[in-house]
Image 1 (tube, rainbow, N blue to C red):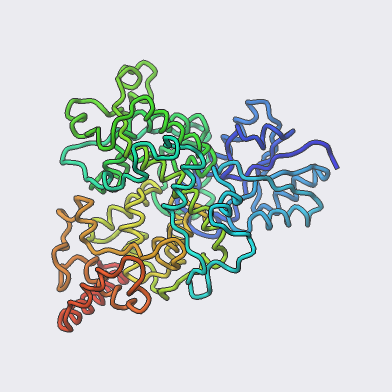
Image 2: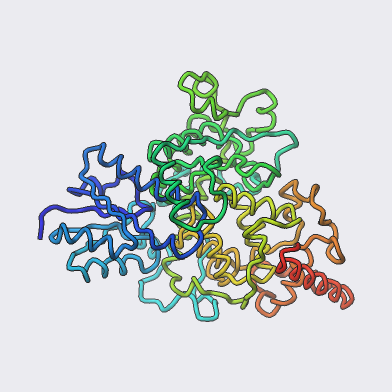
Length: 556
């Protein structure tokens, strides 16, 4: 056996500053194509993944690392090709996040005569041991999710989030949260006034390698969504990812919190960080955005709700254009005093990473493999064609799908309260919804989408939420401007022209009453169910059936 160790980096472990890389004598990357042959992934997603891998290869070589880069149909073929040249190599791999991947890759190496040592994954803040300590589990418990989708044990993100804040000291003042509150959600549910424009999204012009990769993707694979590079602006290198983080903290974080749940026609990005793809590729360590946000609060922090983005915009401050961001001599990009950072914005952003991202990763670990097929509501309908072509008169659904088709992205409220919500009350199969998200989003991996879509969005299991995230059109109307320009009337539940969300919502509650009544916080909703007479229920059922038929036929 050779004394030289080889760090095998997967396509979502692309950080050249990893300890695993520093401790290795050389680096292996295997660009396997088989997964992209199976299904029509978004062209931007494939371009991003493969371009980021190729840039990581070049960056590592520029830093003096010896890198072997293998292109193959499958990991098995790639491993065989590498071991044919290096049979004595000591391979070391950070444990992959996706269920079963570590065992499968270890078996691939062993079957081909090699050895593979699994390392802790540095690209998460917390460890499985941290989770077990919090959950009070010994690792000897039975399956978490049963065949019927019911959970043997249930976890709540808010409890985990507070625990991790205490353990890490993030946004803590001794034993108490900075500002005295753990959560400022009540301040983060506003919609921007008419005429407000968010800071410009930072863009990274595709270089020659990305363009070459994109042309190859279009030639090599059957893809879905926009296959032009015109809208592609994702970081593909660590340097670009760090620049994107800097731009967010400087220009977008101040207005992020107040409007983080809002939806605005023609504005797919608002003030969101757009960092999830870079974090999930490994280009950013999740600690970096958390520390950057807390540092910004330390330098520019104001009390919760203490910054009004609309007033700042009216004075001409707060926005950085693409040209300004890219220009070395731009006074507006580098010299303008950045806006204050309110505590509600920092806390809301940190909760997305330190709370939700870490929480979902651990729930996925604990609940797989049953989580992937969980379907406690026994939903079985196919996704409507509108999810693929965006062809619907529903303004909110059309906007959200078009964002995915164009950019491989939609923000978290569009994902949960439009795309997942409609699929849920329509009755779509959770596994099919999960696959759609996995194929279409640039930041999507199985460990990411499965707990978010199957458990949270589809309520396939109650392992992480006490009630379904289901709503009528009232939520969309409250948090967006979509309903004002939609041909469907959000004020109506029944009859032709009524908002499809409304009848579907009440029909969903009625159809799933046995499972949902009495769970979580559903008491108020079922008091409204009880107040409807049979004539109203007949009209609701007729409208819901009509909506489902129109949606299934691509005519909604």
